Length: 68
Image (cartoon, rainbow, N blue to C red; front, side, top):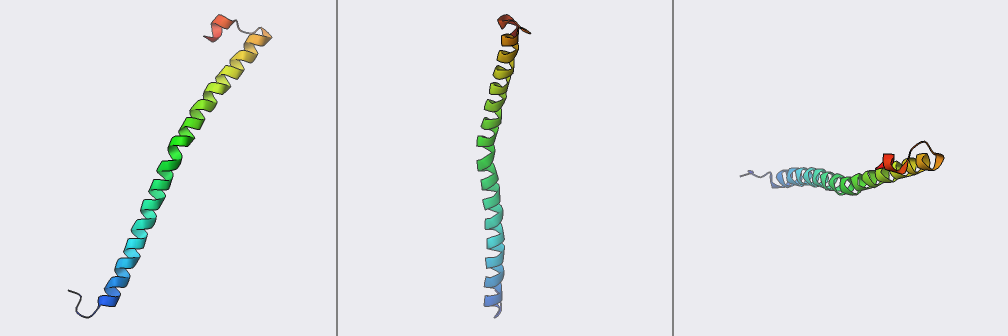
């Protein structure tokens, strides 16, 4: 029971509820960004290795068998 402090109690609840909402939103946003970001980094690394290996093969520094 709040003994006549309903408005104060409702205000405190609203503030705590908003803080919880903001924390949940930030966590969900961060989680949603991580998976595509990690896929991009993984794909970029693959392209980088393929390009560097291809350039080294083209310049004669490596043979095709060395890249595999």
